[in-house]
Image (spheres, rainbow, N blue to C red):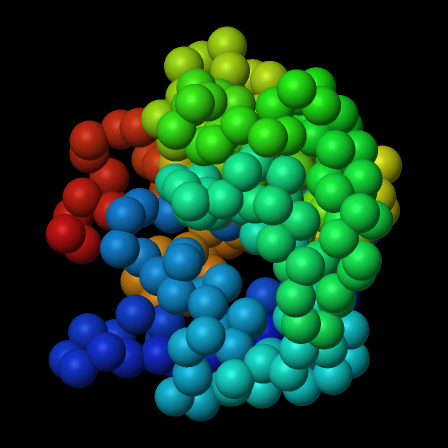
Length: 248
């Protein structure tokens, strides 16, 4: 569904991506791990057409990705942002239905509201939440609203950017379970970036480690603990000593 070949991106003197090769199969849930500042978010932005790579090739469902991306291309994607990124001035249902109220995916207002309420139900929130504003919700509820928005337009591909940041362990577990259930239920292709190893284990079919501008290791989730790769082992066990610390 997504293929990345020889992707490079430099900002000034900072070479962030230095030849990333990665593929994500249709219906697969891939989690990208790696330290802060290694380029995980930049990689997602390149796929979405928000950042222009210096060189390399990206295809989505067999079609070359463009910068900026076309509306038709973006319509395939849903996104759960790290900070929720809800619009404070809009009620919850309009946040969820944001893409359905305008542009390429526009639906009648009543239909968009009905879809929003159904997606809220899918993430465990009742219709009473629909007319509240984001400031009236807890952090966990805001994250659920963000998830409802990500799936509102029935996307083929969903990106999750640090989906459990700022949540307590119990709510993080709830969000991880919801993500896994929804991705499987929709048959969507998912890419997640996270530092949270509990999220990795809960939602990944496969894992890729980004470090030094390249994918150092990729494989099925059930091979992650046994791989001898020293970068992966240092990261997943949170060890201070190892090749990552040495490079820094």
